[in-house]
Image 1 (cartoon, rainbow, N blue to C red):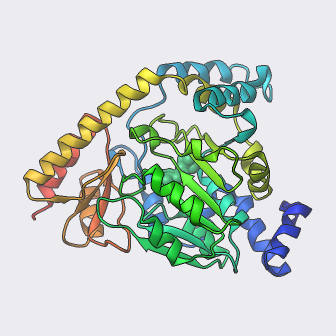
Image 2 (tube, protein in one colour):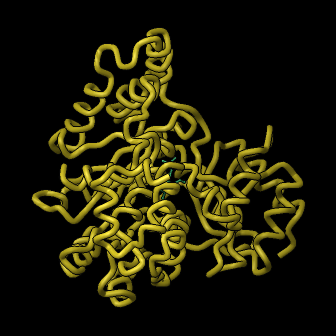
Length: 387
Ligand SMILES: Cc1ncc(COP(=O)(O)O)c(C=O)c1O
């Protein structure tokens, strides 16, 4: 198993306090890439995710995917790349996508790494910066993949509870472990959709230990109008900004993600992420086509906001509590009874909503889908739920 890690990665892990026996466990983790969550135990979140993925038909508003596919230019680019799929990378699809992203973000190409989604690099980043002696710090609730990886690595995990309707409490995050290896900010946050301000992100960057890494996961950024943390990267080697095409761009099954960081940092992530090279030209062609579609991005965001606001207004009118503050394609509903029971009742109506988090067991995350998805959700809530 340890063969999957090269010598640099093995030396790095030993220097961070891993025993030789534990190297195999890390190798298994990074070798499994995005599928790592399956090897990280049968968490409720993972089980719920798998159940959702297995559902045929019905209304899928449980996994924060987009209700529709890539923009037409992206679909056309996939078809044209598929027709030359006998070659590894004819015409430099990788180079074209990297150069487009560099132009749109205003950063050097050397700061950009392409991945098949962002779930893989998230595992790799935790493996690269956490260890049994260097912990992970996150908000709670947040996207729990980093917890699962840290748990598997036996790295200490500190969670700073987040106030309802607010972004991460960055001061509480630092206080939760002032000597961590990795601080993870998800903004907009999954599952609350709330944004952590750039001022707060900068505060954590400037006040965390110099040798710790800050990861800002911007998976849902395009659904909000919040500014990116990318400008904070200038001249620094202790921040990574991560993006995915799985959300607003409607490419969850196509698989494409990005990390933005100093080249030395990218190299370190890659030590623990062999999946970095495994990109399909169809994904890269599609990503290149959609990344510059500013007008369509804006229109899709507006469509999501309209659907979100309509359903939140409807729930509120019925006396069902929705947490405020989401700026992304999800919102949190407080059923005031176990959320998993309401989720199961809605699933029986073929409406698959999201999971709950241990910190708020009565609250479900609901993804914003199409106008008809949301109408079906409202009809199913009317049928199965009595406040
Ligand atoms: C915050 C966040 N980061 C990363 C991911 C990983 O997504 P993907 O691997 O499809 O890019 C997700 C998926 O839901 C997410 O919510």
